[in-house]
Amino acid sequence: MDFNFIQKFLPMYAEAARLTLIIGVIGIALSVFIGLMCALVKYYRVPVARQIASAYIELSRNTPLIVQLFFLYFGLPKAGIVWSSEACGIIGLAFLGGSYMAESFLGGLRSVGRIQIESAESLGFRRLQTMRYIVVPQAATVSVPAICANVIFLLKETSVFSAVSLADLMYVAKDLIGMYYNTWEALLMLVAAYLVLILPISIVFTILERRLRRARN
Amino acid sequence: MSEHIIDINGLVKHFGDNAVIDGISLSVSKGEVVVLIGPSGCGKSTLLRCLNGLEPIQGGTVTLHGEPVIHGDKSLYRIRQKIGMVFQSYDLFPHLTVLKNITLSPIKVQKRDKAEVEAKARELLERVGLSDKADSYPSELSGGQKQRVAICRSLIMNPEIMLLDEITAALDPEMVHEVLNVVLDLAKNGTTMMIVTHEMAFAEAVADRIIFMDGGVIVEEGKPSEFFKNPKTERAQRFLKTFTYTK
Image 1: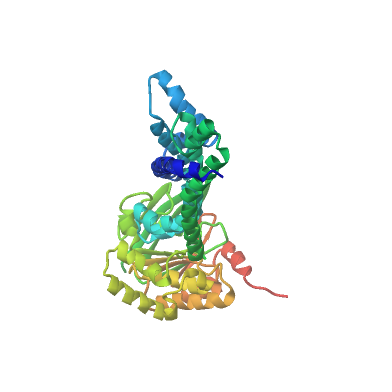
Image 2: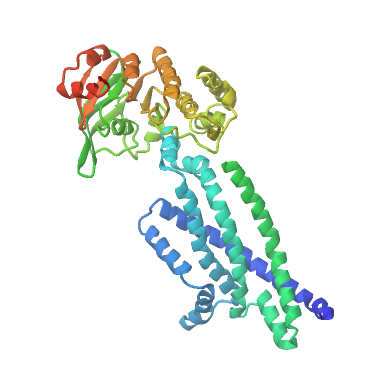
């Protein structure tokens, strides 16, 4: 084990981890927004928008992220649309994550029985009030665990960003292996970096899920 | 003539080609208890659902104090505060305590003072024998207790009429008794009610007027003493016979 190598290139990994985290957070935040919008138009059966959301969800869920990134980074410039690799990473992640988030939100919303909504309406609640006080708190117990799983899945998916020349963790590891052949050290640092990024989030989500389960019971 | 709370005029409700309610007209006066009985699928529950706008109707009118009840209309939010509805399946909000189940709508919908509403909720819980359950969650209650809480939740809105849709259908016999006693108490205190039930003894005890429905129409109506002793129509006689057993 070459500790000098690890010490020398640790700051590069830290910088790449920072970039991965920033792009991951922005992409995931956008995917939550897109997912929520899609779930709402499907839940309320908004004409036209509902069909568009369904088509988007099928397209997004049934194509790999790397293909979506290639399309954004190499395909769109042919049509005169040029985006930086960071922008492609964020848009790609939001495009993929939005569909998974939509299904998670929708699953929660649909788990709340029709009778709950009718009861609230019978008491004079308006549609938004019914959503806020009755549907969302109940839907959350179903949606939140699925959303947490999506967040971790999407953070891991960022490992394909290097395919569009984004200097993320994977990119740095591949670069160092190519230049110095310190495969073992480079991969070890890669695993450690992802663990440092994802493990704390995973632990927080596990605690959150446990609390929700207790609340539901 | 006493004041009408609800007027139904020529009400028609279809599910596809099937006319579930086929031109029903009736009025309910203040303080009156009207009990709807009839075979399953005859349109009793649908009629109640039409009265607070839960179902779109295809013909006729429903009015509360002369104001039309229209499915999907903006005025419905205001009108529904005057119509209490209790369903068969308890339908309490599982994520809220008993007290919050009762107080949420008067606080959020009617914008009433929280302290006043909570005091009133505790008073209602005391009245239905559940004062020790204010901080329990619905999952910790029996079916009968849940249904009594659901009644309190409607009563706290100070409705002008209560619609009770087979509220004991999912309960075992002992719990039926505790819930129906609460309803009898409401009737004694002059609460206007429309009740759908299959409990004939209860119907006879609580009703001022019995309405017997079949095939989406009113087949017979009258005072409970007359209806249960001497039903006029052959259809009502046949229906009531199904509740008696001889060896």
